[in-house]
Image 1 (cartoon, rainbow, N blue to C red):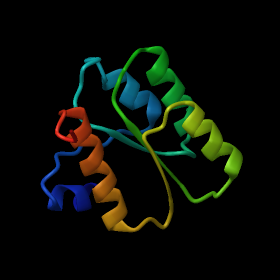
Image 2 (cartoon, rainbow, N blue to C red):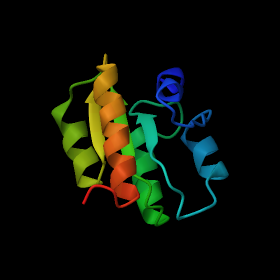
Image 3 (tube, rainbow, N blue to C red):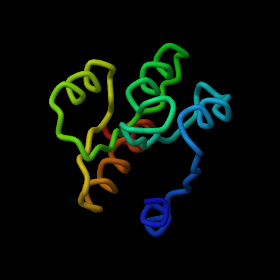
Image 4 (cartoon, helix red, strand yellow):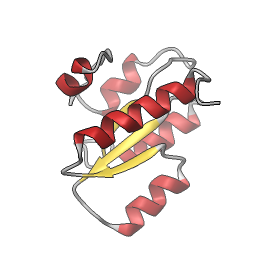
Length: 110
């Protein structure tokens, strides 16, 4: 995924789980987006989403999952997820979603 996004000229950073991301995220006005699996060792992607919201981090989050569980999708949208893609995802869908979120973040979607 990182290689895909790098090929279309997006810078990426990878973390060893949700806790690692939270420990390294120190700017609440960070531009970009977070792409997270729903099932992570330790903190789940949904818990990460809630923790970011509690910390008032306004970076959009895209959740990826193999599971088509409706309740987790509903919970993700309840927690203001910016995108929810099931795997295997179509690469173009992911790139388009990231592009859309970044354009919205920079005010270019108007």
